[in-house]
Amino acid sequence: MEVIRRSLFNIVLVVMLAITLPSCLFVKAPQQTDDVQHVALSPQPQIEMSDELVRTRAGDLIALLPRGWVFLDTKGEASADIVSVAVNPEYTLSMVVSSITHGESTREMTDGEGMLGLARVAYQKHVRKSAGAVKLIGTYRTAELGPRRFGLYDVSMASGGLRTRAAVCTSTLGNHYEIALVPLTVSGKDVPDNATQEATFRSILATVQY
Image (cartoon, rainbow, N blue to C red; front, top):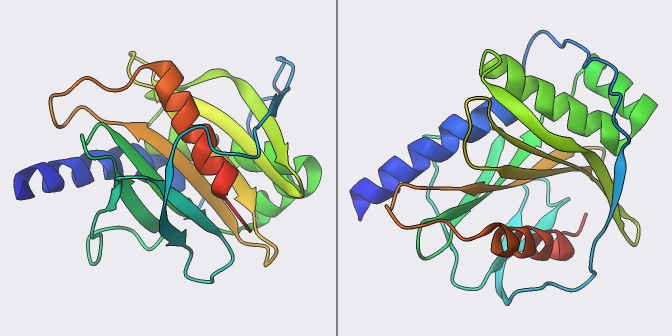
């Protein structure tokens, strides 16, 4: 089990460090020609959630874990940008909550495009950190749940691979965060189908408070 946990954590970091770690250079994303979609999110989770709370260090964002999920101990191993990593009982899905470092370019993008700009920032960091080995799946999207606003995007390896779903948001304290659902193959079990992954991702977002 310890080997599985270690392997799983390494895989999550490989996928997520590219999205969340700060970069000293920001290259503005090319102008997108695709229409931006607005996604309707349900205010209620579609799957059963637990009482286990994800809480940021500043306490300005919380979310619930799906029932049965557990946190991985990342102390001393993860970047300071990673708030928490949790996995389902089968070790086929991971929920990664990360902070997005402030910077002048990030401020310009969010001032100009709001959550859409923040989603572009997160994706471009992923592209740079992977040396262009990833691709955007579909288009950037926006979503609202009452006063809460999210920027959404999906990413996978350019050579083909599993889809990582990501949502970005800005707390009332002005801190930027990303919540991502990362499919995993470390256990050797089949990952849940797309419908189940989407329901899980939307259920997590339904519990986010900031």
